[in-house]
Image (cartoon, rainbow, N blue to C red; front, side):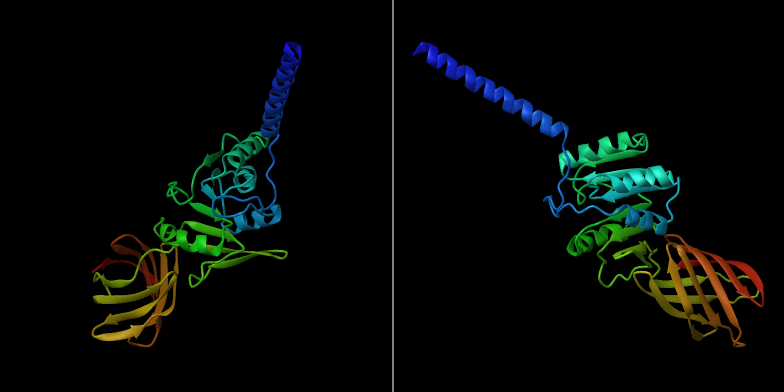
Length: 279
């Protein structure tokens, strides 16, 4: 009986050791499964063709810092580093996926440019990003929207498949049957601005209305208000036309700062530098 018990215990020990070895081997060869569940979404990879289109639309260069929210296997950060020479950070909630993506970056030879963080996209600070990429559900896009809109004007946001409802994209990205969306974070310009007087231009007041990157308003000079024509806001660049008192079109191109507009006012073919202060 003692011998039998010893044999059984030995067999159980061997089975446990074998099982442990099997688990270790499985972890070492981990590969993500299509549609595997995550914290907020299931894993669906973005095709390489779509990745290229998204990063091209965002005009990624070596000067950029790309953050991929929900980075999965790391294809977007790796491509940003390999093909566009950018620094890239992936944020992935699943620890095994994050480790897998970092190993992919090492194998691709871009570990010096790519870092995968195991973290929550609603907790991690990605404010240093100049480009943000996403493949999230519509409700998650909307949850992130307030955070995105607080980012530096000119930051490019590219999402695969899902938009952000009334925030219309600046560009639609297509790759075969796949579709994505590009937004450029707009400066906050709504309100009243006073043009400082300069030679040939009387004091004026600019009144701006804004809905995301869509702007409109009026320019008032000498008590006469003129509607803005063709107003556009792209990042921190504001441009519009208006008709002067002689009904000749004049144009304004300005860079937006926190409390000032700095740029050129062009009329009769000549550009004049101007400054306007926020009221």
